[in-house]
Length: 398
Image (cartoon, rainbow, N blue to C red):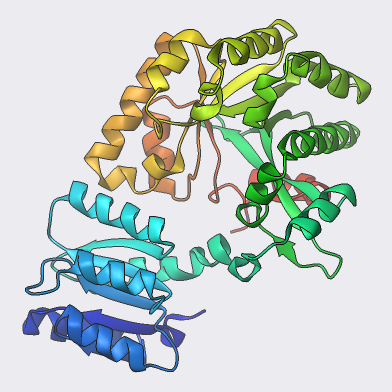
């Protein structure tokens, strides 16, 4: 989508600032533009539109209804597709508002610091197309239990793979297996629409088996093309309550001719909360058998330090929520820096998720992160497309 095709609304109480935004949008050839001087007026306009705007540029500090309250109304009533903040307020506050908007389900393009310039505005609007992949399948939100169960049994749920590249030399050394539902008509359903259904039906462990078996099979195929990669596979929390899990996973990988040392099992911070003693026993046995263990989404829960001190993790994954925009947000950078310092002291490898810009890559490299994962390198792809995608990363087109 070109900038000229975007539908944009400017919500700004300051007359001069609003006119400046409109002039800059015109310079960028944005043709479909609307304006409002306060949140209430903007809501009234949005409710009357036949087609919601792609982006609402909203000032936070407005009299009456402030921008934070306005964004909440927009998100809950689905009055716009995306939002970008325009403000000179504290970056920590802007980060909080962006997190809130994402939690509501809004596409968040980021924030633009006042005063507005053409370059700042263009940069944030160009992110609209970059975020289209994030919710391209939102129409699949209603998934029935019967359909999800049949998809798992029928082999429609398959792993797609996202590369992990070393910061030191850019070499792709591993991939994470991510579940995708490939319908017979070719439509792809993202995991957020079916994982919770399978978990609710007690099928999370079966999904983990499915991902691990298929990922190991692909690893062997890639090795036939001289492509040797580590596998990262997400493990269901219910697995950690099964005393036989370690033997079971060892059998799966050996049946496919894969060394457990080449497989990293990812667990979330909350996985051990139900029965810590049993969970710790399972994880210890997995390490004993050679599997790597990664703590996923580090820092998003409340037990991170306790988990790291008790569990034999080999890897720490930094959540993309901290990575996104970190070069411009000192608080995020501070969290990442502290996490990496802790990982070094515990002799853990580190993977930063959600790396999307060169600036994020450069910052993480300077802080000593081990590996990067994110759209800067590649989106998740089917197994058959992975070798070609890695080759493109090695030899980028100019």
